[in-house]
Length: 207
Image (cartoon, rainbow, N blue to C red; front, side):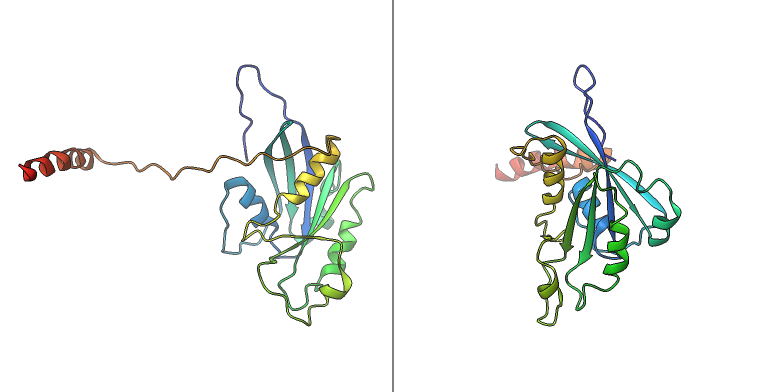
């Protein structure tokens, strides 16, 4: 989880519970990890049980945090707390499938369990994959956010929409995170000595 950076007095970050709903492999976990680390995880690892992750974003109004909840299908039914106190919810599906509406109805029925007062967003992931002409999505759904977690396209959109509504500021904008530097290499004493010897050897060879 992303920790809250404290400078001087601790800063209270507004935090909102957000549900991620969608069939297996549609990209819910990848979306969270993309925001959390900046990296795209190619290997598919199915979600087990309930997973709660805090995603913190910097905005021109200060930081905001979304407490994201995702679960495997059985947990939606068993858990009594998944839909409790929600402020927003995202329904994700895979537009790259030949029939992206497979299992959509069952998850849409779960989406309807989100409280009426909570904000909602439907997102079609994997738009980097070209849809076939037989894709029924072209004829049935038009009002959804097209995104690609892999291509890092439009992945902020649902959270920007939620943040503007929750903080009641239509001019709110996300501030891009500073790109992470490569991990530092830990060199042994012998390697450090060798690196120091290289310049002196180069000078000696020039004489």
